[in-house]
Amino acid sequence: MPTHRLDPIDRMILAELQADGRMTNVELARRVGISAPPCLRRVRTLEEQGFIKGYHADVDARELGFEVQVFAMVGLVSQAESDLRAFEERCREWPLVRECHMLNGEVDFILKCAAPDLSTFQSFLTGDLLTAPNVASVKTSLVIRGAKDEPGVPFDVLEERLSRNA
Amino acid sequence: MPTHRLDPIDRMILAELQADGRMTNVELARRVGISAPPCLRRVRTLEEQGFIKGYHADVDARELGFEVQVFAMVGLVSQAESDLRAFEERCREWPLVRECHMLNGEVDFILKCAAPDLSTFQSFLTGDLLTAPNVASVKTSLVIRGAKDEPGVPFDVLEERLSRNA
DNA sequence: AGGCCCACGCAATATTGTTTCGTAAAAGCG
DNA sequence: CGCTTTTACGAAACAATATTGCGTGGGCCT
Image 1 (cartoon, protein in one colour):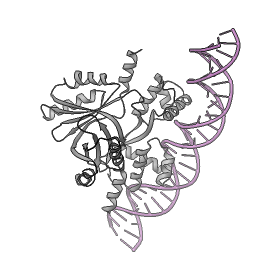
Image 2 (cartoon, helix red, strand yellow; image 1 turned 120 degrees about the vertical axis):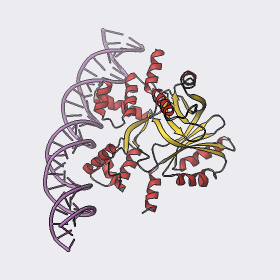
Image 3 (spheres, protein in one colour; image 1 turned 90 degrees about the vertical axis):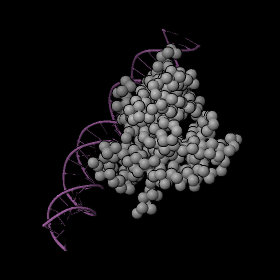
């Protein structure tokens, strides 16, 4: 079990790498105010302990030809744990499904999907999702436009909170 | 206007950097089958042309103390363009709101929110979101657990599609 | 064919990543 | 209160990578 305690420098590192994941280590070290070697050690530790799960380029879906983005609200017939797991596993195998979250309330899952065009999504919807075992209902909403898409978490909220509890 | 045409190597680069945004350029070059200098030139071009919008570390929200993730479905009173813009602008200023997408159908916007705990989210909900001008209704759903969270777009779907149209 | 234009690869240099090591400050203990 | 242990830092040395400049070969138009 790791030492699960992050000091202010660790949090700065996470905030910087969340904002720019390709920053060089020397630049990162300069920004958080320590020299390069301990900075790199901290980053490696944060990766090993799972605070950093990975690094990803943010590609422009529309420019790449994925013009359709859809949120799908899915209700299941059975909410037995094994049935929930089975549905989640199916979602992992569908490449059009980018995110799958289990929710409370009347809807069981929300899916974020990306497709090159509407007909591709429609054939996925009718051919895969609606016909999957245990699926009771699906309500889809097309994304007209994106207004905000920030990665990860708001570190400023975290810092505020920590200074209050200090 | 750029030459908007991506060859197979460009798409490979995007796929690799989406999967691992911190890959070194020599490793990337090795994987896509060209030498390092032209590979770096391609990456720079993809960045300048906007195919790559940025790089981000994927941090573990729960480990960091953001235990609550919520989807909020928001309906507005007026859907006049200026009112839509005004609401979007407000979302950009709320740090708890990580994503904001405008939808078709009965719901106008879907918001993905992250908060350290339920009470923080509740005070945002009642103090900010519900009392914001022009907001008619908000339905929130807590995320019980995440089942899939893949970044970006499925490149294998794109390649399939391109080979069919060839 | 000839010439132009890209994009490539090679080689050289600048910058960065990584390991090693000595030191100093903080935490635990007699 | 002083000692040991632990932990993290920074400087230097080394390895690897990023970046630039340049020469070359293939596609393409006239």
